[in-house]
Image (cartoon, rainbow, N blue to C red; front, side, top):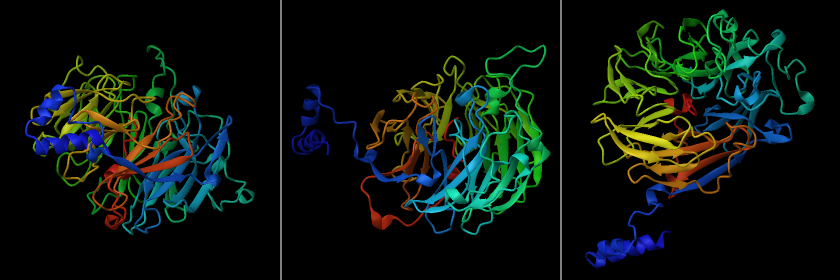
Length: 513
């Protein structure tokens, strides 16, 4: 308890004007620890020892996704690792999933498949979503399958490992010829269906510039290639999202729930840092009941045809499709801080002077004194600097200095008190109130491994309503460590915990972009 603050409040109620007198002597009525900000560690979940691997004397689990895998109304966790780090080691990242391990919130193991791998430096091609509407989510994923081996689930006993399971990387890290696209049963991990379409298997990373083109520091396509993601979408106008899009460097490939290819689109813009969004966003921007894909430099209709193409600034690291002005759904693009409508009309551009490097952009009602929503954008690349933009005026309303973290990425709005109240902002192990510009570190959270393992070793975050009380909790993990952390607001009301409810922020998490 903040006793000085409590005493100030008591004196202020009983002695008129005492608050102003105390303020004059340097006391503050706005302390860093506001009740609305107070987080507590709800659960620390050790990743099962059977899921862990040791690499260079360092033990870790891997990256994590969340969802109700067994249909019991509670959140489960999927740990995965990938083969391949590319020629530049962890700076490139693993992008061929080779291990999955599923567990419940109490640590009970559900299943595992595969083995080996390393921690993906960038979030990879794995998503959890209930495609068929039976209450239990499926795993939508890439799977590393060299030599044409059929993937097999296996017990969690080391002496029963399937000898056919690949345990090492294939020779050609640039190729996706050894990748299959899968839908796995969330309850058992068994493959429901899989496909190896040429739109995926023919893709190849090109680390060098083509003849006549300037050589770039990370290669012509490599910088964009490592950001591979699966995003659940509704391209066919069904009763629920039953499709998904895969982003592979310069190419987007859309699938239905039978793994039929719906469409494929390849962009001509591939130069780092003048390339489309590392991770696209999906949403219905034109109100036709079908999702579009925003990649910053272009907006793809539900059938994969561009609604517009336009080079909007450099470093198109982050994008969104969400409501902005008076509820109108817009394309949000980090480039130079752009707001664009469905026809490509630029409604707002903050400009290169204000946004020289738009690293991350997030949209939510972040201040209860503004009508909202607001846009918070990390506008100077990998730095703690951020600006807040009002949707009412399209102007900057505040400039923020957030806490530093190993990579200065990974901020997320969190509806900490309810969806009807202003969201807090998670950033690098802290929660921030953007009205007061004050933040609190999360208690009992160990320091991340950033700088010890590699520069991307830090806490990823997925806000989620794990307990069903209309407040979002925070799920945190470090891919280079061995635990999953869940934080919940104070006070903890066990009677309000009614079960897990998933939404787009859970099955399409931004994580880092």
